[in-house]
Every structure is written in C-alpha cells, then in structure tokens.
Image 1 (tube, rainbow, N blue to C red):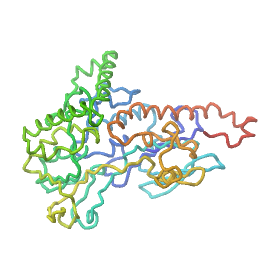
Image 2: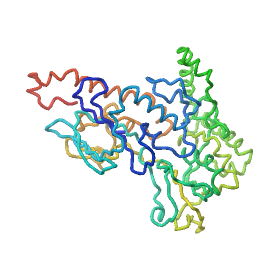
Image 3: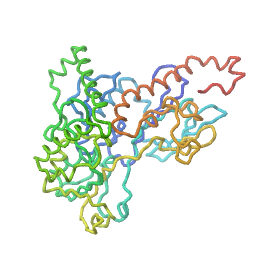
Image 4: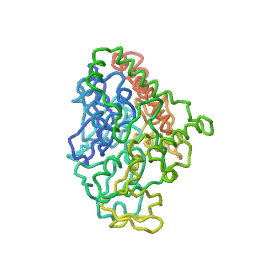
Length: 454
C-alpha cells in the first residue's frame, strides 16, 4: 500500500490519501487489508496467533480462532479503517506508476492510474510514504510454455479468481512454501488428482515458534475461542493483556534456540522436527526420507502446515521432485521427458523480493532508487537512515522494505518492533511540519529556501 501524505489540513486523519493497489484481475469488491485482501486461496490463514498478529494499538477481543483465517484478518482491518475515519482516504483500484521529487517545489509528484477507467493523473505531496510491503508482487515461474502454450487455466495463489473451478479436475500445484502447503489439504477432497511439484523441501514444524498451541489437520486454526473466552477478554482487560503478553513471550522465546548452524541446539531442533514430521506421516520412514530437507532448520522459514504431510500420502497426490522442463498444451513435461497431463496449473511460487518499490522513485539527482540500490548502482546496496529514509530522496519514507532482512524467521521477529518504529520515525516529521508551518515566513526560511525538507 502506498501512502501519499500532503500536510495542508489540520485534523489528524485528514491530508492522507491511501492508494492500495487493487488489480483488474480482482473479481470481488475492493477490499482493504493488503495481504489479506489479495490472498484468498482456499485455506489461507496466519500461522501467528491472532492476539499477537493484531495491531498493538487496536486489540481485538473477538478473534474466533487461535490461528485466524485470512478473511477474518481482512475484516479486522476493515473495522480499524472505519473506526479511525479513514474510509474516505482510501482510493481502491488505483496503481501508483511513478514518484518524482520536484526540487524547485520541494514536493513529490506522484503519477497514478485509475485501473477501471485507465485515466492517469498526478498528485503532489510534501511527504511520500511507501508501505507496500517487501513481498507483494507475485512471482510467476519462468517455465517455457506456461503462459503461452498451456490450454488450461494458470492461477497464482496470490491472484486467486473467484470463478476458478478446480472441482473434479487434475491440477498441478507448483511450489511448497506456505501457500502451497496450506492449499493442498484444502482442495484435495474436491479435485480428481494433484501433481505436486517440489524444488526445495521444507521443514514442517508443529508451530511457528516457542510453546504455541499446535494446529492439526482436523483443526488448522488451532483451538477456537469460546463465547466465555471472549466475554472474559472484554470484561477483564488485565486478563486479556496477560493473555497477549503470554503469547508474545512464547513467540519470541525461540530466538537463540536452534538458529546457530552446527550447534547442539540446532541438531536437537532438527530431531524434534523430524519426529513431528514422522508422526504426521503415520510413522512412514520411507516417506520421511522423501520430504526431509538437506539443509539445517532455520535456513528458511519454518512452516507448521497442518494437514500438508498427511495429504501427501493420499493416492490422489503425486509428489514430484524432478525439475520441470516445459509446459505443453495438455500438461507439464519434467526433465525425465515424462508428460504429466493436467487440466489446470496452480503456481504457489511466492513473491518477488521487493526491497525497493515496484514503481520508479526518482530522487534529487534524477536517478531511480532501484537503480541506485542495485548491484551496479552508485551505492550498490540499500543505504538508509534508520531503515526508513534514503539519502537523496527527501521526505520519502518506507515501511517494511529495506529495513527487513531476507532471513524469514528473523524478518518476522524483527517486524514487530520495526513496523511501529518506522511509523514513529516518520510521524514526528509530519507533525513538525504541521506545527512549524509559520517558519516558512521567517528570516531563516527566506535565507535558506531549500532547508524546508529533511
């Protein structure tokens, strides 16, 4: 989500225009909620407890499950937006095309496209904040014939159409990250057959971290919160705060408990996970050898994936580790030259790594930030101030982009303090400009005309 923030109006929530991208493929009504509005594939949910995943400033006592469904999280954000009077500030079905710093005006000029009408217009802002997230652009695998030869439907899990019909069809699922692992157990009872293509095997853990409650194939959301639980949270704020703190402690307890490669703790973590995986495979050691990774736990994000390993043993699933050579009209050809006929292909292949924006951001020297931070650029790496500002790009702030490391577990655990920190770093600058507008008429400003930006 991109935020354009002119500061010409006084009320706290005015002067903010949000442009969350809602692409033309979207078959349902425009929704707020970022990730949780875009990802609507069967089985999508969060593997972090609901009472920890929520905004700390907007606690919600009404979560229905320990691990919430994506739709419930999306509805939560809709309510937060409405509560704070921000509904009118959102401009859905818009896409930011480019942002350019205007040195003479000391403002950002933002080019925006209305996705329904095709109209392109510009807005100007004193401050420009990019909070589109680091992983928001779906990554489609570069497989010959996938998009131009296959006669069936090709769907990405992050671009799931409402009218996609997979019932009684032979489908291929490419990828076994979080979305692939959630998807398979949720469609297996409705399809004729699944060819599951796996390039890199993953560690399937009982929980994401610490001593959290375990979700199972029969209860992928973990325990449900009863009406009595919710009433207690509503009526006893201290008890509710204690519950939330307990979850946070469990979440962060995992730090330093097996992440060090070659350590005894990492070995013990490996053995614990292998035990859980073996149990979920009904003690089938041969199957365990098929799915066990050849790297240590912690190199990639740990995924609980309730029901995934159980689904792999079904006669309706072929677990394919041979590389994909190409896609033909009727199916997928693997590197062993075997054709696997399918009616539809689902790519559960994640997202591009977006440590820079998805659109050009042109700074004082006329250079795109992506170019400057590229390997061959002037800087060659993401150079920032406190992880939220870039030199040469005045009054431009980022949230959850260059400040987030690429190691997934660390990224999530750092996300909790980084997101509010990034916001807090930007907020005083916005506030100061409001409260000190009179300085623009002072002798200092007249003698330093270019000193009005940070």
